[in-house]
Image 1 (tube, rainbow, N blue to C red):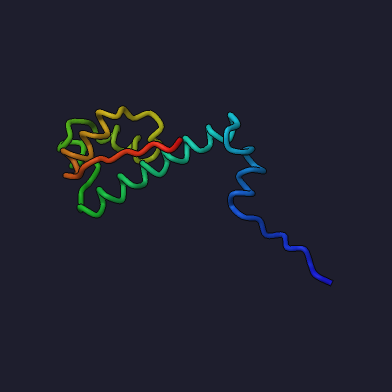
Image 2: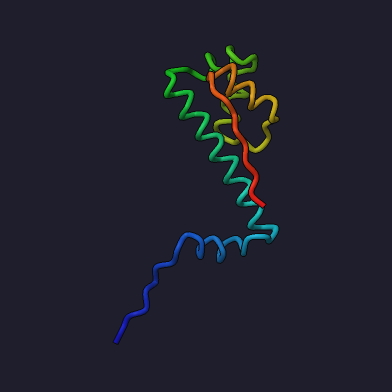
Length: 100
């Protein structure tokens, strides 16, 4: 007799917890997760370059508080500010893609 596995995939978990892709609750989760990933990415890049939040803020003309807010909750960042942080602050180049 074969035992049924209680293991579910992450995708199945998300479907159960937030609904299928396209539902309002799931899309809200997906947007917040992308914002979280952006904040983590910026924090990792800043640390790789050995910079403090204050140093990054000074290089791109913003405040330490704003950098901290982006790294911890990037849900409300303007594209022009993000581009400035990446180019002037981190010396990088921003590339975007859109999935439809």
